[in-house]
Length: 116
Image 1: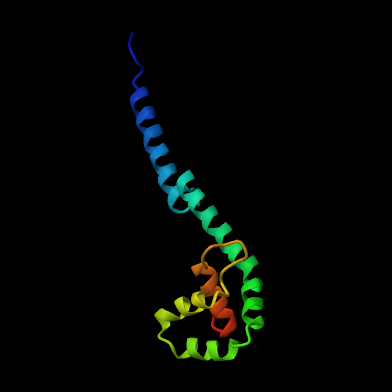
Image 2 (image 1 turned 60 degrees about the vertical axis):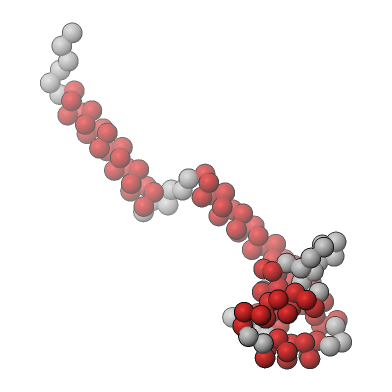
């Protein structure tokens, strides 16, 4: 059986078109792999949980009688030690949790110290 002369150019064009479509789709089209989509979803859900728990942390801080002294000490501390200091206060430890949450502590510190 003889193949038509036009078969090779059509097949080559189809392969090149498929490759170009994939490159354009992943580069500019917003396509992502399932693993990347899973990572983005997990990150977004974690941010939403921290956002939902932030008022609890702020309320814990406001209920502490030594809040002003603690916040003053946190302000004076080096920037890398501030979250650890806030975690030691227990404000970022949610009821039922065994230890404080670092992301919540960061958000709480920023909220309490009016940082952006």
